[in-house]
Each structure stands twice: as structure tokens, then as C-alpha cells.
Length: 192
Image (cartoon, rainbow, N blue to C red; front, side, top):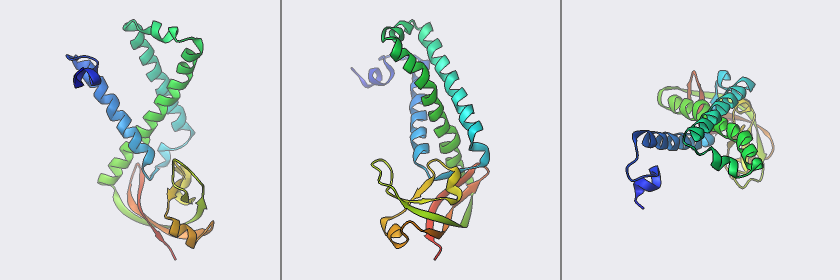
């Protein structure tokens, strides 16, 4: 099995297979970037209206996947797995596709635009240090301020910074770049 078969399902893939595979991998890479950047979105990219919009996008994407499976004669494969697995697919896939779309369109792309074309800023805020044991994220966090409308709603800080101000409200200076899409936080300085 060659690399073309591994990536595209055939040694001689047609153009649509290549485009769909590359676009899917690109979207996945952007979603991963969007999940881990320190970006505070503009109010238009945050809130319940955005969650509903991306859920609708997920539902439309799931309908497109089901339509494609039906045209390719693969709907039976989905139905043969059992009703509960098919039901889980119908309920879970819109949420997953909506989350991927949100990470790409509301976080990764606005963050990249802001980092490339945004204006530099420095702002003072009073934020709270917090310790939360986590296997997947940082343990020492700075919460509040502009991060209240971000996801995740904290900035990672060093253990040293936390131990200087354990569970305290602390003045900080946030520096980074800002555009009409939001603010990318690059650096945190103690305000004291």
C-alpha cells in the first residue's frame, strides 16, 4: 500500500478525493490551533447566538455527510452498526462539526488575522490567580478580566507567579495585538 492509498483511498484518486482530504486535514489542523490560542473574541464572535449558529452549521454538515453516504451507497454501513450507534452519530456529529467550525472560524482564523494585521496593545486589568489541577491544561491560571468572554476563560501563568499571589486579585498588564475580530494575548506582566 502506497502513501496515495493511505491518504486518499486509491493509488489514482480523483480530484474531489484529494480536495476533500486536504480540506478536512486543513480544517482539523486549524481547529487544533484554535483550541489552544490565547484569543479573546470580539463580542460578535461570542455568545449564545454564535453557539446556535455553529450548531446549525454542524446540522447542515451532518446532513451533507448523510447525503454523500446515501449517494455512494454507504448508508447501509451506518445503519448496520445498530440503531443506538446511528442515533449517537445523528446527535453527536452536529455538535462535533459545530465545535470544529467554531474553532476554525471564530478562533483560529480571527487569531491569525489579528496576529498578522492587528495593532499592538497594552492594557491593565485586575485578574484573579487560581490553581486547578488538570491533566490536559495548565494548573496555574489567571482568570477574569477580558478572559470572561474567551474559551477557555483563563490564561496560563507560571507556578512562580502564582505562588507570589496565591488565589489573589492581582493587577496585570496584558500585551498583544488587537483587530476588529478580537485580541490575541501574547505577554502577561505583573502590574505591581
